[in-house]
Length: 76
Image (cartoon, rainbow, N blue to C red; front, side, top):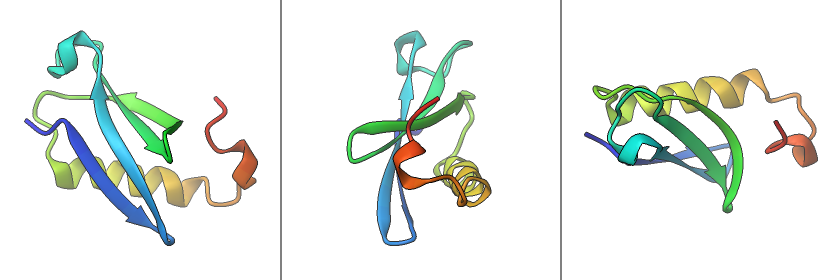
């Protein structure tokens, strides 16, 4: 089981870190996406998530939110 995934996108590095429920992927766990230590977004974590699947989800979110002002990223 993966607990941390690094994603490079548009010259920046993002960290997806599994959080909650003992970071084990149990119900209620989430992937918390961070950039320079600030939380950007989060999404539910599944026990069977692979690094490639998490990277794909993070990239999809980043692409879908490309038009948001940079200062707004991290506000939820």
